[in-house]
Length: 310
Image (cartoon, rainbow, N blue to C red; front, side, top):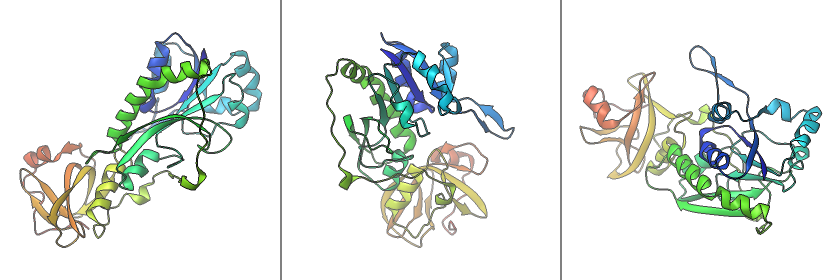
């Protein structure tokens, strides 16, 4: 089949590679516009754009495809299937109708739970024990279309957003060709979503990133793991911002919220309201991210038990 693929971040790359190496014709990719990043505010290309350029795959920008004047150009591509994976933009209903076999979205939650922009982050922030990935046929709504298939898996203790993205990337790439074949042969079935079970996963913001140590250890760990790698949870210690990338719940009883309970060569524990939070990965502001043991080896006396996070 002639496949048009719409995606932007790294999570979609393995799926794109699998399609590229298959018998199907990858006739183009739709990418979000390049963004400025870093101190020099240089334009940074997405992993999908980089791959497409290397393989000389036709690239369309989001600005192009949302222009109604561009519709005839897309129709000339003779698109059989439009696949969307973490694209980051709403695709018009008009464009969804271009592909002969329809348009399908690979969504990183067990729909109808967590429709919207940040399903992986919200599942961790909300301390869920299970998540999954869903293929759905797209309609005019936001992740409301009927479901083709889904794969579920547990959220392991201490897993952050990066971990779940890798798992979902692997699941999608392993299953995508079977899904495409079922669409081509019309052997798939559709299951309507249950609106009574639906929920929304709004985009995470920097305003959510500050840690409230008066929350439960479970909530604090959920925030730390859910917000990594971006925007990352933080707290102040000795007037310096400390960035957290990974944490686990520790059964040690709480003391004063935010108080450093232990900071030896083996563990770094901070008190929540009920139990302690064990910090596994962290960084000082504008410094390199590292696991706690590496941090301790370089800064043994930085944390001590008579100080607290604010």
